[in-house]
Structure formats: structure tokens, C-alpha cells
Length: 240
Image (cartoon, rainbow, N blue to C red; front, top):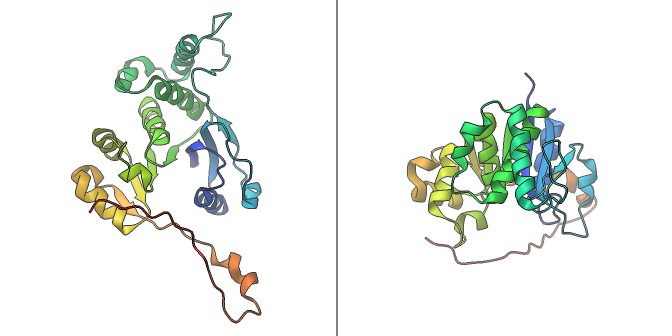
């Protein structure tokens, strides 16, 4: 069976997330089949020109308040509740054991369950063999549930705010780390923090730096004596 990766992102594209685009392009260059699933609509007005090089199709998974029309939707004036119920029924048509697995979602936000059911159905219909989310927040919450519903493994990349922000719930992150097939983080500091904080739950975490394709700089340096870089950073105190 060929590998088909579903990228689960809160928004796509995003001007500030060049690293996601570079990663997808690298996978496509290696011959992998990619499909992108975005959980929120666009909010940026400008985008990097490299986005035009991405071949992967993008599916936008709406929240219950927006919903989508399906055969299971039997209301003439749909509400978030009727959209939610219809999506669960649609998922059960392609996932035979969906209903008993639904209990796994207890305690999750309704919108997360709804989008996970939608994603699970799409993943089954489109032959997705692996799910990967960026940031250990809503994208990973949805990927984790969809993984449970379908049996398709998931991984995620943990960056910064999703690790250290005061809104991060210990038990929630612990579950995500435990259930993932593997977890990537982008710095040695993050790697140590996750291992020290979550212990055995973080045994799957590995560090992979965000990288630059230096070949893109070759034309810039031809005929130049030196190249000077400026980097804009957001510095915040982190816990030791």
C-alpha cells in the first residue's frame, strides 16, 4: 500500500509558517503523496511565493456552526447540533465500529469531535495512511481523535507556544504524547523540557531542527564579498 500523508493544520496557508510549506515541499520532492486538511479559514492577506509550488490539494474542515450538507442532514433549518449529528452518522457509514469508539472522545470539545469525525471520514475515503499535525493544540486534538476512530497512526510537531504557554493542560499534552506514533520538536531545549516534564509519555519525542534549503541562497551570494542576515525574534522568559 502506498504512503499517503494527511497534514492537519489549524490554518493553511499562513504567512508566518514557512517551515510548514518547506516541509510539505520536501516530502513532495521525495515522492510522497500529501493531502492538507485545514481546520480554520484563511486569515492572512499575503502569502509566500513558494506556496504556489505545493501540489497537495487542500480540504477545509468546518466547525459545526458552519457545517456541511450531507445525506444524513435531515433538517430544513440546520443548527450546529443537527450538523454535528449528521457528521457522526456520515462517519459511521465508512467506519463500521465508529459508535463504540466515540466514547473515547468523552471530555473533548464538541467542535473537536465534529472535526475529527469529518477528518476520519475523509481520511478513510481518500486512502490516507498517516496523519501529521503541526502544533500540539487543536490540530493535534483533531488528529488524535481521527486516529482513534480510523486506526490510522498520527504524529505531530511541537514548537513553542503549544509547549510552554500557560493554557497548556498537562493531562491533555500527556495524552497526545502517549498516543502519538512519534513526536517531533524543533530544539534541544524543547526536547529536554518535554522529557523532564512528561517522562515516559515523552519517550517518542525526537528533535529535528527547522531547516533552510541553502541552495535558495546561492544566487544571492554570487559576486558578493559577504552576506549579512537579520533575524527578528520574539523573546520570552521560559521555565527552567
